[in-house]
Length: 299
Ligand SMILES: C[S@@+](CC[C@H](N)C(=O)[O-])C[C@H]1O[C@@H](n2cnc3c(N)ncnc32)[C@H](O)[C@@H]1O
Image (cartoon, rainbow, N blue to C red; front, side, top):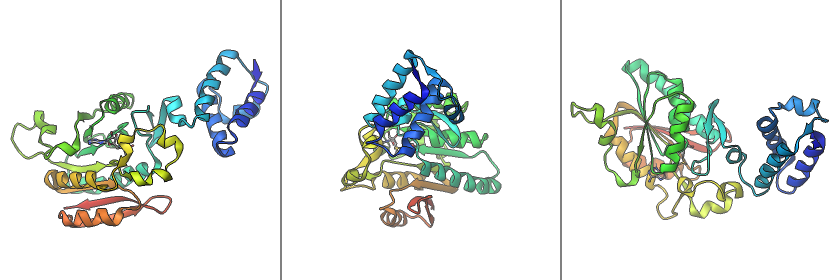
């Protein structure tokens, strides 16, 4: 047995050479909530609480993983995105705050679009990972039909669990987007009329970090998150954007909108490519940190 005060001291001492105090404080609060069901205020009010040996052992295992720079979200196996709970593991990227900003933008635009088309909105999320974009969208727009693609079977397994956890229905597909030239198969079952398959919104946060940018990437990301979700070659960094733009040109409805999360260093190149592919209108938005991180485009 150890008192909470003693354990906290040990915890901070162990991590102080690796992380700033504010971050250690956040880790500690998350673990206290997970293992002791303590809120931050309990940590302050109950310094003499006795941590039993079983709990201490579990905390030590988590502490060891933190010391090895494993992200707290993977240690706990969960995170929050857009206020909704998500299961995550090493097969899924940890959803980022800038992606929440993209979802906010899509929802704003969909509200306008819905007023003009007055029908059920259909959305396709390419490279869904944990399913965070598709699921948040479905939670907010109950009358949307949502489709999501990923190449990773293991990520899709988690995305399906997340859809269930959040009580939404998503049509998931295991597809390598780089190997297809049409999205016809996605609505095969519902498309008896042989009308071309169309989506009102196509969104993607594809892999976009160039291999040469690896030196800027934190150890916790580089050593833990799936490289298939993150990296592209320096020779062809826009390959996902080009392919998705081609598919969107074919498969967006007349008023349909394409949304991308983008590499902050490649906004100009992506825009030039989109204009060459026939995009008529576009808007680039900055994230909270002032970096260009999102594009909206229409054909
Ligand atoms: C940057 S992550 C985005 C995950 C999630 N949408 C998010 O915003 O957190 C990119 C995703 O694209 C998927 N991906 C990579 N290559 C792909 C391909 N060729 N076809 C389909 N999906 C692919 C990865 O498995 C990963 O889940």
